[in-house]
Image 1 (cartoon, one colour):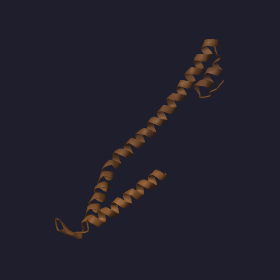
Image 2: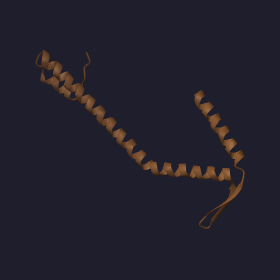
Image 3: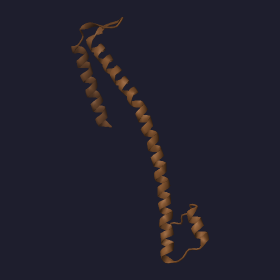
Image 4: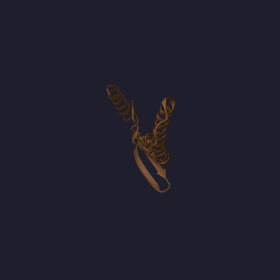
Length: 114
């Protein structure tokens, strides 16, 4: 936590130094729009717009991967339960033949941990 605080202070100091060294007033023209401001503000605004555009481009893939991850977690849980049932059936089969009621209860999810 303290490392993040120190990194934040360092980034803030670098930003202030950058802004103080780039105070020249410039004019940026894009099609019919004209923006006049300090070089530091214009550069930081361009950087912020680039970050926003990148996030918007990555967002659909991130959402798709999140739902895929959740589905895989559910499938993993289901397979884990099925494996546990198979292990129990194997233990019963090694010792003696289990009654049909016990096998049915195991198949329906009644897991008895020894």
